[in-house]
Amino acid sequence: MQCLGDPMKPLYKGGIVQNSEFNSGLMGWSTYRNIKAGVSSSPSGNKFAVVNGAGSHVTSSGKLLPSHSVYQRVQMQGDRHYSLSAWLQVSNGTSAHVRAVIKSPNGERVIAGAMDAQSGCWIMLKGGMTAYSSGPAEIYFESYAPVDIWVDSVSLQPFTFDEWDAHTRRSADKARRRTVKVVAMGADDKPMAHANVSIELLRLGFPFGNAVTKEILDLPAYEKWFTSRFSVATFENEMKWYSTEWTQNHEDYSVADSMLNMLQKYRIKVRGHNVFWDDQNSQMQWVKPLNLAQLKAAMQKRLKSVVSRYAGKVIHWDVVNENLHFNFFETKLGPSASAQIYQQVGQLDRNPILFMNEFNTLEQPGDPNPVPAKYVAKMNQIRSYPGNGGLKLGVGLESHFTTPNLPYMRSSLDTLAKLKLPMWLTEVDVVKSPNQVKYLEQVLREGFGHPNVDGIVMWAAWHAKGCYVMCLTDNSFKNLPVGDLVDKLIAEWKTHRASTTTDNNGAVELDLPLGEYEFTVSHPSLKSVAVQTMTVDTSSSASEHTINVKS
Image 1 (cartoon, one colour):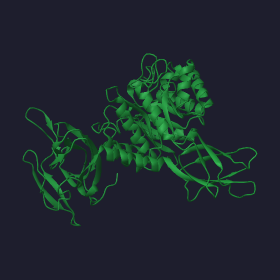
Image 2 (cartoon, rainbow, N blue to C red; image 1 turned 90 degrees about the vertical axis):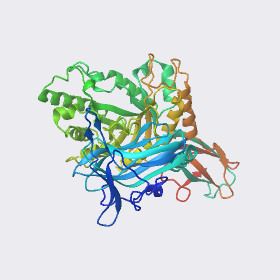
Image 3 (cartoon, rainbow, N blue to C red; image 1 turned 180 degrees about the vertical axis):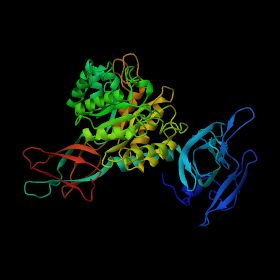
Image 4 (cartoon, rainbow, N blue to C red; image 1 turned 135 degrees about the vertical axis):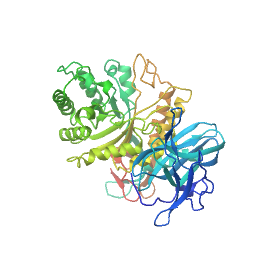
C-alpha cells in the first residue's frame, strides 16, 4: 500500500463530510469518552486530526474497549450507496489494524473498511456501505491496538442506486465491448456497397464459468446444461489432494482425468484447484502426524504429481489455497512456505497463472485476515521471494456473499488492481434468501463492470443432495430463479446486431462484445457467400482496426 509523507486531497472534495481536511480546526468533529483531540500540522503545513491517550484499554469489568479517532455526525439518505475514503496514521512507532465504522441511521454499526495503518506515514483506507434508511449517522475509526489514530482527508460520497448502476453499465461497455469497422471487398479489391453481412458470436471473450462435479460424467442432461453456458470450469473437489490421495501412496486421478477430457471436447478451460490447501482441517489424517522430513517428501510427491500431470492443460493453479486465513504449511515449514511452493509450481508449469485464492477479501470488511492491504502484502511477499520475479501471478477472490456491500467490493477491487496482476472472481455465490437473485445480479454486474476483473467463475456446482450454497437448477436441470438470472446476463453480455448492410463505401461500424466471430457476406455479384472469422479484442477499434472480407 502506498505510504506518503502527506495525504492526498479527499476524494469528491469530501462529499458530505464537513471540514474534511481539518483546515478549520475540529469544526464539525467530536470525540468519545472525553478523549483529548486537536489538530496538528506536518512540516509542509498539512493539517490533520490527532487524539491523545485514546488507545484501547480494558475496563474494570474486563471488557476491551477500542481506540477511537475523532468522529463526525452526518445526515444519510436511504437507498444510497456511500463510498468512504480517508487517510490514516497511528502513533507509537508501530502499525495497527484500523477499521472504519459507520453508525447507520437504523442504529446498525457497520464496518465500512479496514487496513493496517502505519506510524510515520499516511495510508489511504477505502470502503463504504449502503444505507436503506434516512437519518443521522456517525463516522469514525477504531483499533484494538494501544495506539492513537490520526485522520485526514475524509470523504463520504453518496450515490443513488440508479447512479451506481449506470456507472457499472458504462464501465462494462467500455471494458467489454469495442466498435469495429468491417469492410467488404470484392474480387477486384473494390468496396462492395450494400452487401449483406451476418454476424455470429462464436465465443464470448469474457471468461465466465462455474464449478463442476464428477456427476457430470454420468448425466447427459448435466453435461448439456453446463457445456452450453460456460467457457471456464473449476472442479469443486476432484483435483484436490484429499480427492487424489486419500490413502497415502494410493493416487487416483481417474475422475479428474475424465472430467478434464470431457470439458476439453467443448473447449471449456479448466482452473487447477488446488495444489495445496492451507487449512489444517482439510488435510488427510495421514498427513497431520508426519514429521518435517516426511511432510516435505509427501508434499514434493503431491506437487510434482498433480502439476506435471495437468501441465499445459489448465489455465490457472490455485497454489496454496486460502493462505491468509490458514497457515498449516507455514506452521510446519516456516513463513516462506507459500512463496517456495509457488516457485516450484511455476518451474513445473510455466504457462498457467498462479493464483492466491482467498475468501472475504471482497465480502467481509470485518474479517481482519484477508483485507485488501493484507492480501497485497502477502502477494508482495510471494513475488519478492528470491527467484520468483518471473512468476505469472494472479489475484483470486472467492466472493462468497451474504449481503453484498457494493461500495466496499468496488473499493477493494480498486485497491487490488494496483498490484497490476490478472484478477478473477473465482467462487461466486450468494446464500439463499428472499434477495438471493437480486444480490447475485449485483455481484456479477459489479465484477463484470470492473475493468480490472479478467474473469468470473461461480461456485454453484450441482449435487443431487443439494449444492454447497447456491443451486442454479433443480435435479432435472431446469433453471431455478438464480439460473434464469445467469442466463439473462449471459444473453445480455452477448448482445449484438445479427445482420446489417454495408454503406456506399462497403463499410459498416459495429458495436460488439469482445469475442470470436464469424462474418458471412452475401451480395448479388457473388456466386457464393464469403465467410471470415475475426477476434474482437481490447486492441480493436473503429479508428485502427479494419476487417477485409473478400469474395
